[in-house]
Length: 172
Image 1 (cartoon, helix red, strand yellow):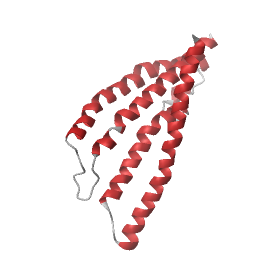
Image 2: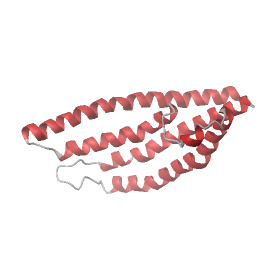
Image 3: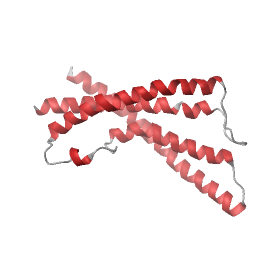
Image 4: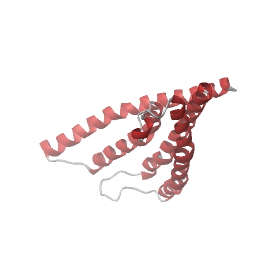
């Protein structure tokens, strides 16, 4: 059973690692795009609503789809005042992580996925576009990254909870 769980965890970790590295390449594209946008606006007095919206969309994609990668590498926000206190040993921290994941992270991810789905489908059905002249079309594409990002965070959360659970049980 433990081998099966470890195999499951490693597959999720590999998926998250791969997607995280792919998404990180978008940061370079975003920096180049912002540089282009600023240059065009301040040097040539020429701006583009579509470029500005694309910057926002890329930032959203990086943030939403990169959250699972951040969780995998333990770089997420937590209340360190308790977590790093001298009163918590490794086993207590592992149980703290398991309970936090099960009681807070996973229900929150499910809530966002369920709540965002109608938001995405309505944008698709109505072929929603930017309200700004010259803005981007197919707004459902960017909106679909909300449930996708939270699904990726959910599955990585499951993997992290299983890792911590196995660690806590091994330390007992």
